[in-house]
Amino acid sequence: MIIAVDGPTASGKGTIAKALAAHFGLPHLDTGLLYRAVGRQCALNSGNADSPVDALAACAFPDSLLDDPELRSEATGGLASRVSVHPEVRHALYERQRSFATQPGGAVLDGRDIGTVIAPEAELKLFVVASVPARAERRFREMQAAGRAVSLADIAADLEARDARDRSRAEAPLVAAPDAVLLDTSDLGRDEAIAAAIALAEAAGARP
Image (cartoon, rainbow, N blue to C red; front, side, top):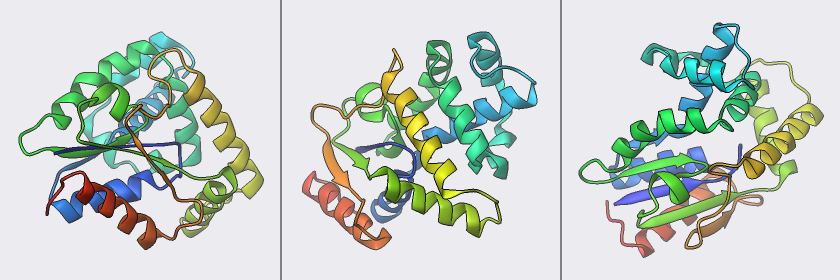
C-alpha cells in the first residue's frame, strides 16, 4: 500500500508519516530532505539557489549529506523551498522518489507533491494542514530545543513566504490531490494527529 502525506512546512506531515510507517511496517521517505540536501549542497558550492543551473548541479549531492544536522535548520529549509521551484531539480529527483514509492509491499512518503506527481495512484492521500500561528509555534519550540536563536515572528514570516513559493511555482505546486483527505492539525496534539491519521489509513484498507 502506498500512503502519500502532503502538506506545508511544520504542518505535522513528517511526524504523521513516520508514525504511519512504523505502525503499518512500511518504509518511509521524507522527500523534503532531498530538496533540503540540494539546497544545502548549493550553499556549500557557493551557488545561487535561485539559479536553475546552480540548483541542478547541487542535485549531485553525496548520500552522506542526508545525515547533516544542518539540513533541519530554518536557513536550509528556505534554500530547499527556493531550489524546489526549478523544474530541472524536480525532474532530477523524480525517479529516486518514484522508485521508493513503487517498491514491493508499498511505502509511506511525505512531501508536497506525492499525491499529485510522485504517486498519484496511492491508496491513501493525506493532505495535512495547520494554521501559520500553530506551525510557527511548533517550529519555534523545535528550534529552541535545538539551541537555535530564532524569533517567532521571523519563523511565521518565513513560513508564509515558503507557502507562497510552494503554492505558486509553475511545476508541481503545493496543492491537495482531488481525492486527498484533509487533516487539519492546528488544534491537535501529536498523539491525536497520529491517531486520526492511523484511523484514516485503516479506513483505506491499511493493516499492520
